[in-house]
Amino acid sequence: MYLQHFRLTESPFSLTPNTGFFFGLAPHIEALQVLQAALQTGEGFIKVTGEVGTGKTLICRKLINELPERFRCAYVPNPYLTPAELRWAVAMELGVEYSKEVDQQQLTQLIQHKLVENAAAGLTTVLVLDEAQALPDDSLEALRLFTNLETESRKLLQVVLFGQPELDERLAQDKFRQLRQRITFSYKLRPLTAQEAKGYINHRLNVAGYQGRPLFSGRESQLIARASRGIPRLINILSHKALMLSYGEGDDRVRVRHVKGAINDTEDASLHIHPAVLAGFAALLGVLTIAIVWSVTGI
Image (tube, rainbow, N blue to C red; front, top):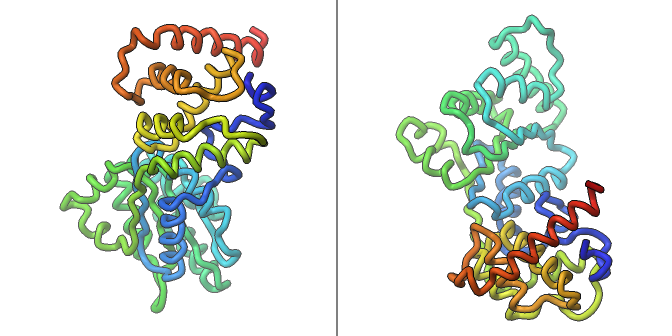
């Protein structure tokens, strides 16, 4: 691939959320600060929403990795679960011991006993759900009932919801007013500015081992920021494809034409460029992709 060509030690623009590439972008730092402050209060629900690709899962993993020792975390990455499945998932994450014959009422009691046990040991239990917009209605209600578990002085369980804007739309419905009133802290992730996008691109290249003059100038970074609408996932995709095109031409840096070729090849990115102008770059990108697959898989 282009790693050796640009003297990189690893892929700088992988789509897999990797906290090793975490960059102190203002919206991400602000979201973490809200989450950390909210968890210190020990009350209710906490919610973080943002468009697809804005970094919710990365923030989620960063939060979990940095929780102080006094916290016990149950993490549910795919909450498209029935109420019963949600209880099983929570019980498993909390390390609750149960037999196969246990029914749902008994399972709920076992979970409550575990929460009481954690609290008695001075531990705060946190349930973190990613992609929370996928929770069925009945499971959202079951989640609210979980937070009814409390002592006289504190909640036994805090819930952190990460979700797309559809989660806000669902919670705005009247039938979810009880749950909505329990959301004590919330944060909405915004897209990156052009300057933040430039810093983000350079940071990921540096973490991946790049040393030398910038591979992306201010103009190329601005084009990527504009075409991606400031969404980190799209910035990754466009930067990766631009590097592929630059490598395919044997160039030592990314040019505007490479960025435009990457934009033309990405459905969710656009500068309203006529496709015919960039057809050659799209073809080159396709050839490079096939070549990379061959080199990796040997097929």
